[in-house]
Length: 102
Image (cartoon, rainbow, N blue to C red; front, top):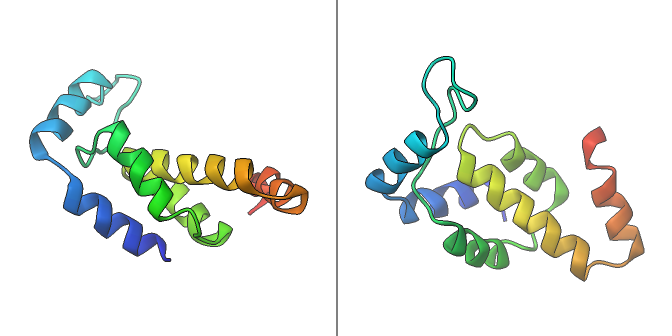
């Protein structure tokens, strides 16, 4: 699975109303701590379900999603990494631990 497929899936699940609420909640205006963060409007329980669907993404593809401009895509990528780490063998866990070098 590709990071573009993950983004398309999240965009299809997004809500403009929920995205607007998230932008206010996370203080994304100029000078605020979340300045410039963008949202698709996908709730966390749905992100967790999507992470299960995409848990077989390669680490390269997950890394691509971690660099997304969208908050939910980055969070979903983290959920995917957690699932891969919990279900992975020692070698997989070590590769995930080395992600900061990708």
